[in-house]
Amino acid sequence: MSGARFSVFACSAFGGLMLILLYCVLATGADAITRTVAQSFEAPQLFFFSGGIVAVLSWLMCRTIKEGKVTSLRSKRPRTLALRSMLFIAASVFYFFAFRSLPFAEVFVFIALVPIFAALLSGPILGEPVGWKSWIALSAGVAGMFLLYPDGLAELTFAHSSAALGALCGSAAMVLARHISRDDDNALLQVLYPNLALFLVMGCVLPFVYTPMGGLDMFLIASYASLLFLARWVLVVALTHMKAYVATLLMNLQFVVMIVVGAVVFAELPSLNLIIGASVIILAGIYLLIETTGFRLGQQRTSTV
Image (cartoon, rainbow, N blue to C red):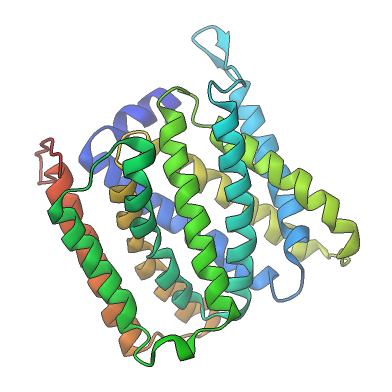
């Protein structure tokens, strides 16, 4: 599917939903590899190689001929893109430590914080007001999260804090992606430059933590980079046609994929509290989609909720 057709497809409510579902599958595959690699290597080793691979793939696609012209590699919002790159690096490192120590599906709890942060940031950054119906859905999402930890803050560890900080930085980066996309029509720039920055920053640290790798390790890192490249491209395109907090709430559907992967790959079965809490969050996302886009079978309306 060409870039132009890809963007047209994303313009419909159904197309946007399908893009987010595709993102969930691709991102979960990358997260599973992160969990595996994190047991043997430090973050700079994974992100140096993967960031370099993703940056090269993005550059190659950016250099393809489009309507007789080479796609420009210049952003109209370089400072905002630089800030997004910094947030992207921070989120990547924080999530790395979370996946290293927490059960696979439990990291989803903190991924579910992303729409809450995105909603708070969308107003001042994007000028996208969140109506009262949307706040009901967002409040339900928060309630679902608290169901997961009945004993309160006593259960939380450094890994939980890392996951929460990763969600904060990640949601800010996503909101900035939508802000940048208002002026930059090349979505791949937002994949290229953050990963190039990740490659350069991790390269400065790598000599101090490097551990020799085998062929299987390199294959896993290459697979991680490929999945991540596709996932982030899909997400950036989806965010150009969908409000940031709606897109991030729909990303909670990733929980279903994470449960399956956690059970099959890591032999981790979710607790009842985890299932109930996540279900509340997912239902909140479905409700928000209906109220903000008027998503119906074969129908779409515009709403300012």
